[in-house]
Image (tube, rainbow, N blue to C red; front, side):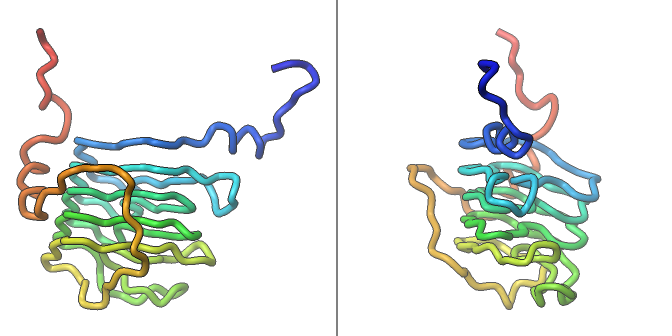
Length: 185
């Protein structure tokens, strides 16, 4: 960077945000707040085009993930024993929640800030603007979900084959995590 060009902190942050990221084949467990996209509510912190695929989230509390101002595909993940809230869409985020298996996710309590039911998908506490979700072929076991409906028709612009939620659960119990992939020649 030349001496005449300096980035302020906010411009540096905007220049360093991620796009076209895939988080896949992970076993993420025993955490309070699991993950988030965008570091804040402001437009300059937006991340974009993120896929969470084939992950297992187990014994966590919330933010699985918290999504702000991003376009996200939650594909074929297994959410098990999530105490509070899972997919939290805020600040205009658009999320395709597809082929996921939610088991023991949420309390069913009403969020004090947004009025949403604590469970697998919604807009929960913190930000003053909702996000949006498209729910496609998900399974809910011992999870408050009767209130859920899609709030957008958002889709992703690529070809892929989604598993059924039951097959996603099976593969998530078998394949993600450390030591699963053998990389020896």
